[in-house]
Image (cartoon, rainbow, N blue to C red; front, side):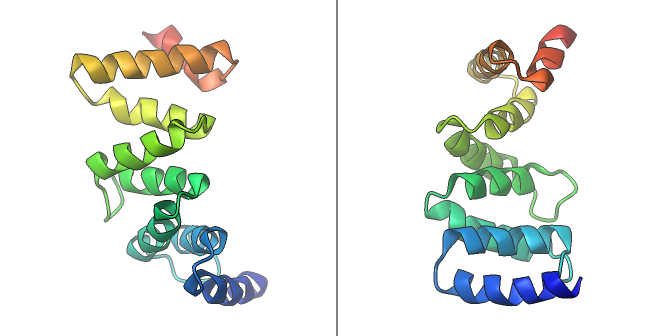
Amino acid sequence: QRDLAQAVVWWKKAAECGMAKAQLSLGLAYANGEGVQASQATAVSWCRRAAEQGHVPAQYHLGKLLADENSEGHNPTEALKWLRAAADTGHCDAQFALTHSLEGCQDEKSQKEREGLLVSLATSGHAGALRALERQ
């Protein structure tokens, strides 16, 4: 725990200088309560800073934080935006997370997008996508 607290000190210094990777690391520390007291709002804030710089892993994690129904920052519309941004770069975890977010959408376009992502992921051997397609 002490090492994590020290890491948070350095991540914060780097994050305040605009380093996206440090911003993401700091955001995840707050999300998980590692080295700091957990704060979803602070986690979202730091991840958003990195995501806005085009940092793909931050876009994915921000999307996941915003998609979490148990999070105080729950925002399904913004979650879709960030998950889609990361998914569009080929980020497999973001693509799979996007399929979960699209599952609640009832419009035909979203359902076609979801199915296309699942088929693409399953074709590449993604176990979660294979299971999801088997359940359909």
